[in-house]
Image (cartoon, rainbow, N blue to C red; front, side, top):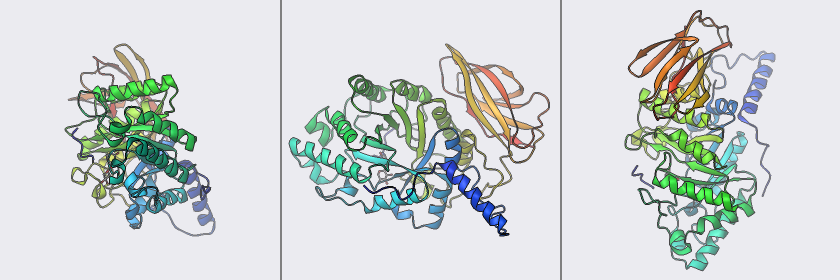
Length: 463
Ligand code: XIL
């Protein structure tokens, strides 16, 4: 799409999201034991995104801006939902080194310490990028630029050593379009193709514990740009240049939709021996169409073993860099959008049982549907959906499944399908009764007709 580009120890040990959840149960138990009646109906957000993702071995993060942390609703939504944060602008070159060798980390530090206090992980974004680059950098000679680049990487990574799970070492170094060429930038123009390799080698010497990522946009499907990045990563792996992951920004809208080969593209990078991460996800739109697109992205990440996590590019539509496109999971009043429910459902979580103030908290979500691909062959695959009852027993359920065109469902078992347009709604084949927490599953066979994308499995409804 034509994108508008636009050393101390951790304060406390990292607690995975589920650790945080466990702590809240302990707290609730202590309060109950003390006879304090609290939390009923308004307890810890049920099914927070980070917890649901953690149950699938992934993180679920968001971009954060330091200047919004003081807004109570912003901070409480962040804290209730996410288990990883990326500073949206505060770690960029112009923010931390606006004049040469004079570093200011205060805004980024604020985000990192907030994250640490809440047991969230931090993604580092970004060390070497042509944008948000102070003017003094472009004025340097090649020799000076090389030393400034390596010094920048060293100083910033040293300051955050041990606190960052993954660093975007180089961001957006390739051109859009069919050339597959590098983008012109001070680094490319003065240091040549080798600047990326040099940046990664320097980064590894500074913080060997952080995953080192190459990050870009318009690389989400297979195209000339992603092919060029693929060739670079393959070459790096062959020659032992230290690279651990590739970030896919995933900024989508109607001009740049979720590619039909999104999952296949993630998989081919993973097959090179790197992790893949969805780093800046936002999808313009609203309602069920937006929700279905979010589902596709989450399902694709879950279907790729080496997709280690997702980050959405902001908490609320009102502060999004593409605010008019309302591309995020929470609206301007911090209400959960259908896209939120879709993401949570795709992660296998449930928004039922507790009301954290969101517009749809409580009442719904008496069951969840989780998709997995159970086998695949040339021309087809088998999918399985596990239906799980929530905190109460249910007597029947329905789950909508949409296979992407031109795929066709050729068989369904353990369920009764009815099809309308391209949506197949599956109900129990016989008795749909499930006790609280119990699960069942149905399966189906799909002929791919050349499209290997995962189906979109919608939210389970129960009665
Ligand atoms: C954007 C921020 O969201 C904006 O606040 C800022 O004005 C410009 O940068 N690709 C990236 C991100 O890697 O750093 C960009 O973030 C969005 C595109």
